[in-house]
Image 1 (cartoon, rainbow, N blue to C red):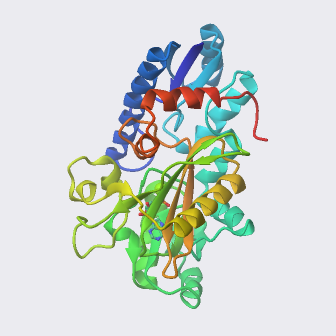
Image 2 (cartoon, rainbow, N blue to C red):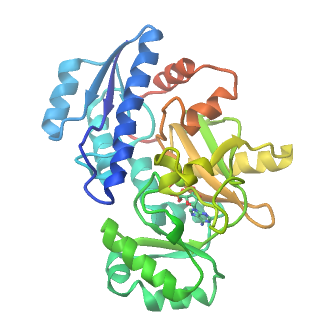
Length: 344
Ligand SMILES: Nc1ncnc2c1ncn2[C@@H]1O[C@H](COP(=O)(O)OP(=O)(O)O)[C@@H](O)[C@H]1O
Ligand SMILES: [Mg+2]
């Protein structure tokens, strides 16, 4: 098959810090790894940096005449929020493409919307509340957070409402009182030009659940957990931006992904929760659900990630490797799962 490996290639993201550009560089390396795996599997791989004009993007796809598009696009014109728009164009193209549809990408990208859908489907989520950009950027949502403090105990975590890849997550994200929460909410809103999500900080184990398959029958891959035992002392354990992107930093060294090694009943509970999150948020192809275990062992979903990083050394591929299959087999399986059109 002819497979176009479509990826973003902007010089820098439109918002956030300069080092957020590291995430963009990683997408390009991933596109190379996927292309090589496809070629070893007997496919013709055509890497394509997504042209920044939609008409040019569609023209480039038409000219390449692919049987399938391997979609690695995570942002468009430096905007993560435009990822679903690219998926929408792929849906209109009629060409089968890998991973989730525009619907799932749009839902997952708006954490408050995703949380509301998860809660409606009976999937446990962290208690909290969303602040609009207007509220957060004005006074950090002072009145709303004072109300929240009456029903949700500290510590809390303050996150951008529409980012991923731990953009905006660092040591200052976890707060112990309303004043600190407001200050952080205002900072995050202004830095990322978007709303803010404030929720209970769940101190228990963090688990990553990789899922693979069609929307209606996902397979749960071996469960993985974050080992924070080498995380800098005196700081709340969380996967910060530096954990994911600043190689060799204390945060990077202190967040190792390991086998979860849960007892079978607990593992099945986590897997079932992840499957329900996948279904509720319309994921397809491949995805990863991030959870934490609450004090009583309840798996609480932090977020779902359609189209997670497929780099050979990233979490999804490492979870897949625990099945005993190769990276090349993973890439070929994801191509097999590609389909044309919108979400079911
Ligand atoms: N409610 C929470 N309780 C504890 N830790 C959290 C919570 N929400 C987020 N985190 C921490 O922040 C990290 C990034 O948050 P997440 O919601 O997964 O956003 P991203 O899309 O950036 O990965 C998580 O991996 C986790 O370590
Ligand atoms: Mg996450």
